[in-house]
Image (cartoon, rainbow, N blue to C red; front, side, top):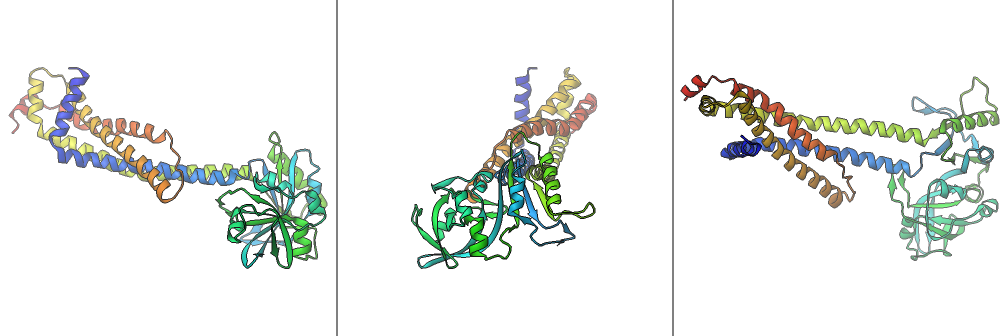
Length: 405
């Protein structure tokens, strides 16, 4: 008997009881579809988180003022970093870009419109560290920082909310009582886990500290961000920064750091690990549906053996070997599993892509994973659920089988 004959007979047997076969296939369809959708969900979450953090770059390091939190309470929450600290860190050989930064909130006014947004005082290097592109105009330079100039680079969402022209470079907006000239508009970057990246006004840090906030400590900042050269080692640079700042802040050996250093590379690696475990968890949950489907196939095949006992007896009486009986029943089991797996694969990919693009407006990653998974499931589930009924059929006594009614 050729392979074609085996599959032809398997199809005749499977299609002979359409309702029972359909319900059995449906269990596999639901199981594979659930696994495919869960894989897509896991990869989408992983890609979303990776995209958000990769915009900061793996060679980006952030130093924040204040000691680390202890049980949710920050010890030493005063601003312990300064612009001078940033200038000293800049002298390290591995530092490519660096900027002190200070966040704030302000009401921005243009004509008869006003909008509450985030203000960020920083250096021009901030644009290079964050890979920010300019749509219109340009970024301010270090002369603007030295002179505390009233220059502003705004996000596209801020420009929209204020009703500014398409190219608002040269227009004046007012923050507090100070008029600022718009020198640039950022390209849209979308939302991140830190909030909107497009609703912001970026100004020289000296302008923010001296003219807007009127701070008594114009040198103090809440954060220093830097980007190191690609061939530099993050841990080495962090050790150098820690040593430099502890010396500058005159900390004793027994004193804890009055600053915190965040390594974006380490955060990304941690997030990759966490999302990887999340994806495995989702797949494991969905795999329960596959287990139920495989039990359904086994149940169907055992029922089929009972119904076809006389047929099996006839086959063995005319010379069919046990091996051929086993192959016949295994092929039927694999066929059912294969049909269900392919249908589940198509439905799973279709639903995940449709929901992602049409409802969530997000591109769901398409990978080879679901295809390989479905083919593997079709083979393993088909064989595993069919082997017991196949062996049972092969071991039937032909004389007893012929007497079976």
